[in-house]
Length: 113
Length: 112
Image (tube, rainbow over all chains, first blue to last red; front, top):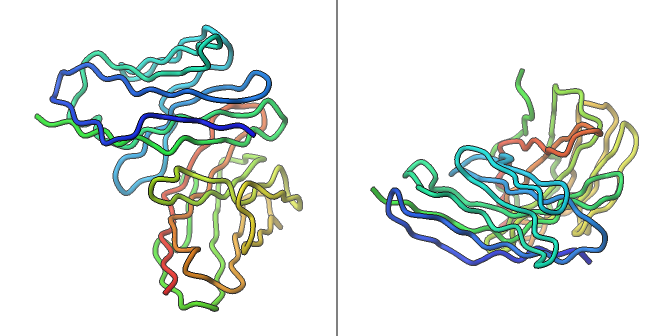
């Protein structure tokens, strides 16, 4: 079945540091790929998405590129802020009609001033 | 617009008790989902619904039942709660022509 593997956390960075959170996937067909973010005590919010190979999703300074050849969708940000502290989930959506999501285990990011 | 709401926010049950979690949405979305979130496990799909009166099993359906009698509501039931069902439960909704799922704030359930 489909699966998503992302780097374990926590990832601890100082403000303005560069962020990379690795995500790789296994899927049949051509899934859509997502990054969701969960702030403390809240539900998940969509951060960015990519629906086909070589697409780049971007939002709020975060970027991720759909790499079919390496089955990866790594999340990057050039300069993190304290307010970026959250748990980040990589996910894929099947190509079937119901778009169920398969999530990675999540990576906690802690940014200190 | 309230978006996606979940009731209750917190609940403590004893083993063997039953309860129903309610998810309500005012976005007129066709698809609705129930997930559970456990430490180190990410989110796992319990059941989902693609329309009023239809439901389907997800990855971890055992011990749960669901109903979608109205388009705006999706109920998750636990008939006989077990400690293994201690978790945070999230509801999500999606328009059938969109990619994005919208999540509720979650229900934290503890079974003792």
